[in-house]
Each structure stands twice: as C-alpha cells, then as structure tokens.
Length: 252
Image (cartoon, rainbow, N blue to C red; front, side):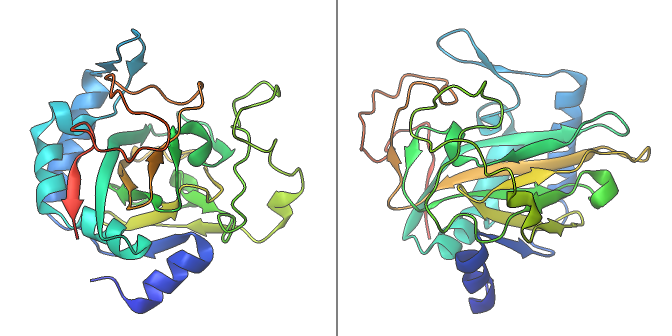
C-alpha cells in the first residue's frame, strides 16, 4: 500500500523511495531476464531499422509480461500520480557491470520522449543492492515542479525542439539526494525530475534494475522529431492519448 506521506513526498520532490515493494519469486524471475539479456542481447527492431536494446521486454519475455500482470506496479504509478488508470509506455532493463561502467550524467526523462502531460513517471525496481559505490541513483528533489524541460545531456549544444536549453551550470550545488536501495525496493520519479547515477565501481556484482515507464490520464502524444523511436507505427496524432495496443492499459 502507498501511504499518504509517500504520495505527498512524490508530489513535493518528484521522487519517492518504496522499500520492500516487491519480493520473491519475482526478483528471481526478473534476474533471469537480466542474465539472458547479458548473455544474448535481444534488441527489438524499430520500423526504421534502429535497434531499441533491452526495451519493450514484455513483448518477448514471458516473465516480464507476467510481472506486469501480477505485481502492483501499475497501481503504485496510478496512486502516486493521482490517475484513474495508467498505460505502460515501455519496460526495460538497466545493467552496469562490476568495475566496468561510467556515471550517468544529469538528465530528465521527459526530454527524450514523445509525450506531454503531468502524469508520466518511471518505476525503478532494484534487483541488486545498490549503494553509492554500486551505481546508486542521484536526484535533484523538486526539479519537476517548474515545468522546465532541459535539453538532453547528449545533445551537441544546438537548439533542441521543446526544451529550454541546457541544465544550469550551478544546479549541482543545490541540494541533491542519493538513494541507496536493496533488492525489491522501488524508486518512483516524475518524468521531469532531474537525476543521474554513480558508476558501479564494485567488483562484487552487477547493478541491475527493471524499469517501467507509466502514462496517466493526462499523458498525450507530442512528437518532436528527435525523441526515442517507437517500435511500430502507432498512427497517433499530436495531442492524442496513447490509446494503442503497444501501450498496455491498466485500471487502478
């Protein structure tokens, strides 16, 4: 169950930690998916020939489809966003190998997606213990509330449609928050919440997470011409809700 305090924290900070949200045997099944992807990556091919590695896993992995149906992930997203129902935008696996990764730079999810609306969030389910030395996530609490969407961190500095420019150079001097997690913990963050992650410097284990992206009642399709490509032609028009079989529908 999501508490009133957790809902308030998500609204204020744009990020909330849900300890012990998921237990066995689901963690084992999802770890098996991560292992399979490490051994034999199975990119889903987009219509333009571009690969979408380790995304839309529910289409090809029964364990992911089963987890989405059985676990309260959709309910967590709907409750925190205050949405009557939600759709799954996509799911993916994040992995940073032991002693073989770099830090992830500060960024927002919103700048990479063909979406508009307030009710858009990510659920980051930890499959391993993840502390500062293992690649923990870092956040700038409250950064979602201004409504600003910054230019993606990987851009070359040229104008980026739908964004307002780069992150302010001094923003990291503000109060940032690192969240350490255990297997089964979930971190939920708003699509505009600025976040980053440490590198995995440990020699003990990989840093793995099953990540699901969720769309609430007010989420609409907003193509910008640069965003992450979709694997099929949805034939959606600007401003339309994402009512398409690619985006699984759940009711709260």
